[in-house]
Length: 379
Ligand code: PLP
Image 1 (cartoon, helix red, strand yellow):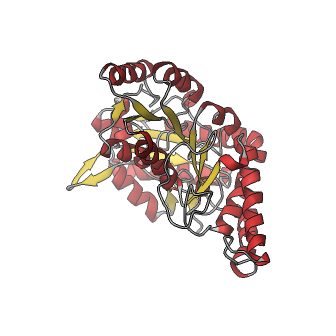
Image 2: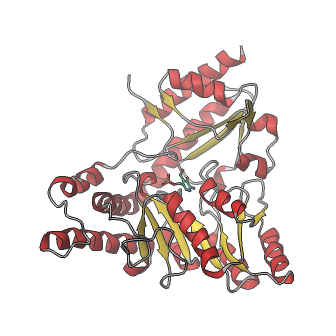
């Protein structure tokens, strides 16, 4: 039986064109791109071309693009690198991915509240920025995600930028745009920030390739030093195949977005409307108008998500929920807690995420299997 894959926010299948683009760099153009011979220059040229293609989609200059090893590394580099360069305080909303949140928390930074959809509270952000200044401190970096990985909420980064520029003109603004590339035209986001992080496996490229845009040149200290690759921004032998494939996937994602957006949105709406019609006690966690097209997130009364995911897994339906088992007790997700969702409601959370390979058949099967599983668990 084939898998019904409703977990694209975790990782989306590679685009065949991206797979094809990477293969020659394993066994044909395999030279180390840092070398001095012609063969190495061939590999280097492929990276330069990939950088140009990525920059075009992101609305930045090629020399502002740094290739890293994953989205987590890009986020870590932005925040750790900003603190290393200028000291001070890092700040982020409470719903950030752990790749941001944990770095800010470990540095003793400031965590800002969010509204019921998970968008940063702009007044709270302004007050927090003012409070650091009033305490004679300085904020070195503010990190606000463009799209939330759990509930799919879109944050208006231009609006965040206005607050940050007004209340902390010297602070860098970083956005984790890892979940945004499939759904938002990043040319509208990049101009508002100093730093922007992406991860290739979220848009049809390979795992293990991240991107960090540093607008206006180096803004932060490098995280990984050594061989001086990426103009001293990120050392380590380039993942040539992965970088080439990431660029191919990003260009295709960008070209298809205008058609994919409404197609996936219609599928998502059918999936959520179907669950609401089939089952009692289903809450849509965030209004659809606040979310990206590929995201469906519901809380289902009377079940625990761990049990539901187990039953779905047995039926080869892939979904997720963001609860973590800490010391034997199920802890609801930090995102839902920050949004003010009660613990009881949050324990029945289910994240279904759709993407470029999702079909009507996936929605039909997802609906059938999830509805039957919830009825069975409730009995
Ligand atoms: N940021 C967000 C919003 C994500 O969803 C993820 C992946 O789940 C990451 C960062 C980390 O990216 P990577 O898996 O490439 O380390």
